[in-house]
Image 1 (cartoon, rainbow, N blue to C red):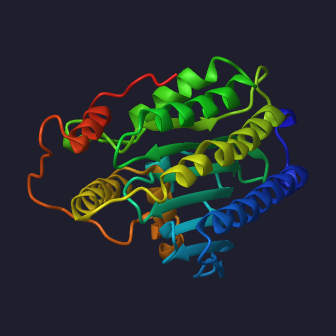
Image 2 (cartoon, rainbow, N blue to C red):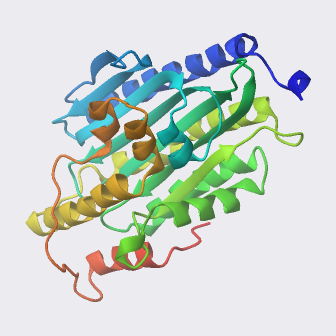
Image 3 (cartoon, one colour):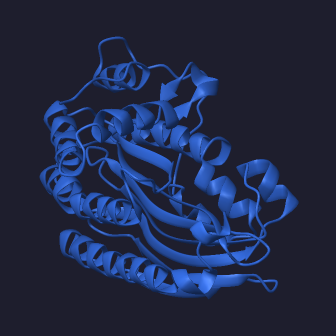
Length: 316
């Protein structure tokens, strides 16, 4: 019924609060990562969508650092008309849409420092009279190590379990399983991208978990990034490594590329909505390998990591 929907102008205050949270979080994460790296700083690129499409974003990139070989912390505020392609690909039905989110991917130089990905986003869909006909939140954070440190894996999952439990103790096991099931290269015998984390999509406000709940939940999970990842990177950044470890890192980076280009919904959404390719594809690593039929030696450190990717664990 129309009386239960909100006109687009009536959602402006909430959208502005969400945008403020995204930009503030982007700035604080970049500041902390620059402190951790100690050599280089983020470069900022403000961009607008081309071809008359609405919105734009702020891409912040780091490269050639002591810790981070390549990384990006991006924010975007985009909107436009729902196209036939979007309807089919995203299973949505509406006239116009609005989306705002934060996305980060960090590819460290040292193979013993894991790659990390995080994304928190909000989406509104409007009918032809500019009333909100649907809205949802999505996001999560996941870890992709190249060598398995079980204490780091436990630490990472414990921080996100704590963050989820502060809102609803049913969410961590659900979102942990979602993550294990989502970041999968199904074309490679259901090999996971890494050791997981949490992942949720299309979480719509309802009587139990309203608009404010999901906003606070996303803020809490985004805040947990600092405690979940920074200590791991700080601990491992000076770990010695050689060419064998670097080669394995690039093999696993190849799997990362495969997932992002074949399966990742965020990448596909960005490309299908005429998003900015440079910002969308910033998630790809600077170097990767695709050696034919590469298999680690059974029982090796490389094989230990692969077994966890094939058979997800309960870490906490």
